[in-house]
Amino acid sequence: MRLSLLAQILDLLCPRHCLICGQRLLGEEEIICIACNLHLPRTNTWQQPEDNDMAKLFWHSIPVEKCCALFHYHGHAPASNLLYQLKYNQHEEVGVGMGHLLANEALRIQFFDGIDAIVPIPLAPKRKRERGYNQSEAIARGLHEATKIPILNKLVRRKTFVESQTHKNRWERNINVQDVFALSPDYAPGGSKAESLENKHLLIVDDVCTTGATIISCCRELMKAADSMKFSILTIGYAKGQ
Image 1 (cartoon, rainbow, N blue to C red):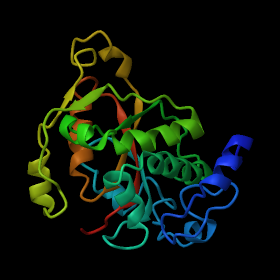
Image 2 (cartoon, rainbow, N blue to C red):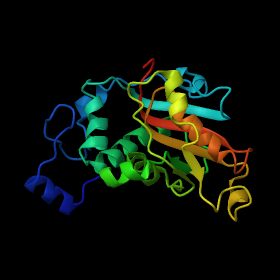
Image 3 (cartoon, rainbow, N blue to C red):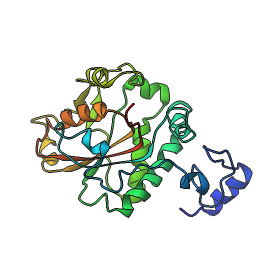
């Protein structure tokens, strides 16, 4: 992404810094510097998007096609600061920038082929008011800017605020997110737009995938509109075994 003249001037007046190492960003570097980008703990999900540890989380639960995550997420690791800044320090631009980076990886393997629309995981209204934005929507915007695939961010909503998933085991996570999503009236069975989802391939986007419980719950709600749809999944982080 080439910086405009205005952006170059602003960069001189207000230098940007890498969110991992703190060094000044140069030229077209975005969010993180080239060195930190090269050293991100990338996952191997890109080698076999249809059959990897992350994809197996969703087998037998939803009709999943492909699953990839940018890097392995570990709490307090340097790379985890990216998601911390996005979720807790009001840096919405981090989500868009990481969406660009995620898209660059996915485009190399034609990940987006056949995908009809992007669906960011909804955030509870209370959390969205506190944060001012939905971090998954920010990531989705970065993906859209790179691919032009439309975003459907009013397709499904999160009904309630549930406790944080961070310290829960797999069973507790599944229970915690049961029945927390609801289709918008237009897309609910019998709604005016429900038929538009028949045979669609939707890309579900979230910040971190741990057990997959939240994504599964959201997809099962979406399947009430059209059980013929299928899903692919992209996240920034993959917290394997946590």
